[in-house]
Image (cartoon, rainbow, N blue to C red; front, top):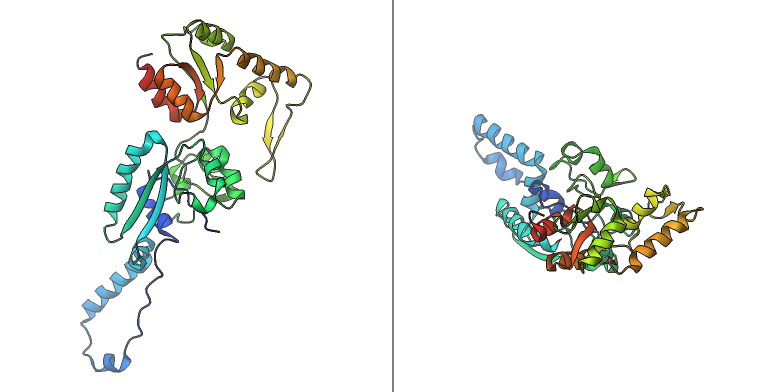
Length: 310
């Protein structure tokens, strides 16, 4: 199975990791003609030392060796979220310009970090070579063989350049599988301050009342366990990852947890708290139909563009 490589293009020095498995085979040097060499006049000692030093430098530089061995076109498919298309395009152009001796064929597609896992696991072979995803997706991606371990630490010291929590989030069973892009994968309630007061936002029930009166909606991916966990955890019911790194154990079926589930259904029954995914939520915020939303840092700019000083 062809394994996919996750990498952050924000780090241009990771070229070796991206090229591994893409370039041609290493060039083989022809054996020297000892008869001819024996009749040649020996080069000056200084020149010989210079040549040896240059060869030693190349041999010690894995990126230089990799580029020298890359003779075919390097084809890559890269996915970036819709809002990161311009930035990623600029980074790709800088990346190609940094290695002018290599011919690249890089195709850029659009894929949200929140849906990357589902798209990749639909067809691992057809997925991108480079993509970003939320860290809660890593265990299933690794279990499916969809990620390639990060081994090119000689080009970028992941552990030394990132906080411990970010490195841990990119690691499964002691193996690093991704380049951290942000320090956390938390989520927040973004809201339009022209609609809600600071007092209103102390209670979700009050926010639903205010939004409903204004004919507006509050967006949240309620059908996603990653988000509704907040309701259960807030009431003292835990969710933990099992040792297999894929399945979970929870206390959501304990006495009282059913009350949490009923509360969620009651909130959604108002028709104001609406279950919606990431892309749909972004569109609704931009259009003005959603005036509060639960999402991650990736949507901070979306909310800021829509509500500006509010």
